[in-house]
Every structure is written in structure tokens, then in C-alpha cells.
Image (cartoon, rainbow, N blue to C red; front, side, top):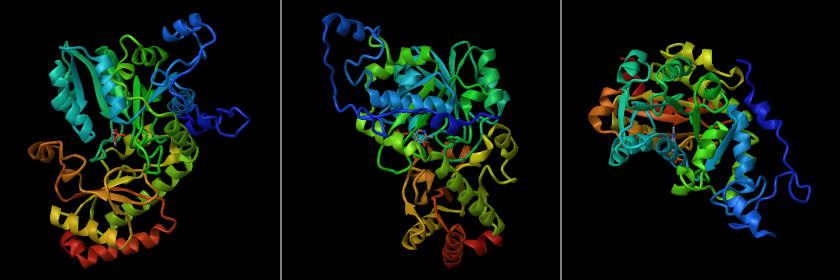
Amino acid sequence: MDFKPANNIQDLQYFGEFGGVNPSISDSSTYTFLSAKTMFDTFEGNAEGCYLYSRHSSPSNLYLGEALAAMEGTETATVTASGMGAITPVLLQLCDAGDHIVSSRTIYGGTYAFLKNFAPRLGIKTSFIDITNLDAIEDAITGQTKVLYCEAVSNPLLEVADIRALSKLAKKYNLEFVVDNTFSPLSISPFKLGADVVIHSLTKFINGSSDTVAGVVCGSQEFINQLRDVNSGAAMLLGSTMDSLRSASVLKNLRTLHIRMLQHSKNALYLAQKFEDIGLKTVYPGLKSHPSHNLFKSMMNETYGFGGMLTIDVGNIEKANSLMELMQKENLGYLAVSLGFYKTLFSAPGTSTSSEIPEDEQAKMGLSDGLIRFSIGLDADIERTFMKMKECMIKLNILENELA
Ligand SMILES: *Cc1c(COP(=O)(O)O)cnc(C)c1O
């Protein structure tokens, strides 16, 4: 693929009100009108370029949305107050009571909890299926199915969805294909591979400084208009609007995303190879041992690598916890959920970010309790980081057991 997401972002040119190099932030919740007629037209969405009220739209949110639409190659996008604030309105916009969703079974814990526990209250049912098994996905589709949902690279197991093939299935059965691309910004461009709607939690790599929660929905003008409709739009009416100050700060961080992703990917590939070499059970899409290594390669925008996320399995939760505590003590990273920070973050998903998923289902999907999920940081000297991590593992007898 010769899609160039970073170029598309770079080619947008915004100036501030006074010729500033950053667009001005509109620090207002409401806007004045010279004529009452224009106010009515704006409310109905008929007055281009006019703002009425900042839950509807604001200049800062439109700038950020445009930049993210350019990144994903969609017509437009709408930004939201969090990743979940993007996911839930999209699903509620696309599904009525009685409708059905086919979802990957390895997805973000919050999304899983929404589909499993909340959506059924509204009459929306979900089948959770192994996303790498296309036959099982097809078998799960019923006459009521409206949406096919997955993550391009799944949380936390790093399964890779075959977006081209899933898109064909979605077209065959007339489903909306929604892809959460939080783990693989720039590397994978789901819309270009056939997704209808692409979602990100901006909280992670895209903002990259772990100082805010934010989200985005990228899609067609028609769908984004539906989400924002004042009478029936889920994004409008559920109110997960981003604040203008935050949009402005996320846009500034987006400017360096391509450089950060390069470093995250480079460091993660180095560590994954070294971890595998010393006998650790390591999962990283950039490793030849990853079952979907070639699939990832066939979908990726090459420049950005295989991303910053990897997992290792150290056997049991006690070892996982001691290792994480020791690595934090040695200042190799933080024992924290989330991802995409300059610092390496690690957590045991079974007891944190995926704890919404019942234990028996965790076991079924291969989410073992010795699993540690790493979001690899921007370390300048990753060789030194590896040596220190290895020392921690030796000290805790993790390597001997693994090698035995
Ligand atoms: C964090 C995350 C979300 C939720 O985003 P928030 O910004 O925390 O609401 C959704 N999907 C994935 C893959 C995530 O990692």
C-alpha cells in the first residue's frame, strides 16, 4: 500500500486568529449571532462555518477531527471525550433493539463489558468470536446482525484481524464493519483496507503523553452527520463531547506521532527479539513466530513498524507481579495500565484491563494469568533497558524456569 498517513496530516495547514502557528482555541461554550435567522439555520445544521454551542461543534474539535480523518483516509471524523465515548455512540447509532453484533472476543475490557452487560439492556446482543477464524465469524452472522466489530491489533493478546477478508464478509452480509485502531495508528489504515468506521482511543499513542482521555470516530460524512444530528445523533445526545482546550493539545501531540511510532516500534521489535532469544514466551506481531506476522506485513504502512505493544508470559501471576514491581523499582517502566507513553508501561491484563472478562472466558481465549502486557517506551538506549530487564528476570528465577 502506498497510503501515507503522516503526509496527509502534515499537508493540512491551520493558522491561528492572529497569524499564530497553532490554530486558535475557541474558549467558549456558546456563540453570538447578528441575526436570529442565522441562529435557527445553524441549529438545524444549515449554516456552514457558523458555531452555535460547543457540544454540537467547536473550531478546535473540527481541526483535530480533520487531521485524524486525514490520517485514516476517511471523509471526516468527530472527536469525543474518551475512546469509550466514541465506541458506545457508534454502536448505539448503528443498532436498534433486536439487532445483533458479531465481535472479536479479544477486545478492550470496557468495550467487552459494554457489549456483554450494557447493550443487552437495550435489546442489542453480541456474539464474541475468535477474529482469526473467518469461518466461525461467518457462521455467527444472523439475519439480525448489523455490525462486525474488532480491533485491528487486539488488546491484550495482539491478535491481528484480517481487515480485507472481514470487510468482504461485511459487504456480503450488508454489515457495518467497525474497527478500533488504537493499538496500530499509522501502521495500519483500516478504512483503506475496507473498514466502514475507524475508532481510536486518543488517550494512548496518538496523544502519547498520558495526560488526557480522548477519542475519535472516523467515517463517511453521512455517518458522522448522523452521529452529530441534533435530533437523533448518539454522539450529540449522549454528550461525550471533547473540550476545546484538550482538542488543541491533542492536535499538537499528533504532530510528532510519526516519530514516536517509529521509536516505539523499533524499541518493541528489539526487546521482543531479545526476549524470545532468552527463552521467554513472547508475542509481538513483528516476530516471525507470531501467527499473523505475514498478515500484518500485508496490511501495514511499512514506515511505522509493528507497533509498541508486546506481551510475555512468565508462568503465573506471582512471578508476573514480582517482575513488574522489580522493573518499576529499577525505573525501567511503570506498573500502570494504558499505553503509548514515553515511558514503558506494564500490567497483567487478567487482573487489570481485561478483568471485566470472566476467568473461564479469559482461559478460553488464551489470556493466561502470567501474561504481562508491555507498552514499550521511547527509551534512547534500548540495549541498556534490555540488559537491566534481563537482570530483573535472572534475580527472580524467571529465566531458569522458562529455559528448563
Ligand atoms: C483504552 C482503550 C479504549 C478505551 O479508551 P478510553 O479513552 O479509555 O475511553 C478502547 N479501545 C482500546 C483498544 C483501548 O486500548
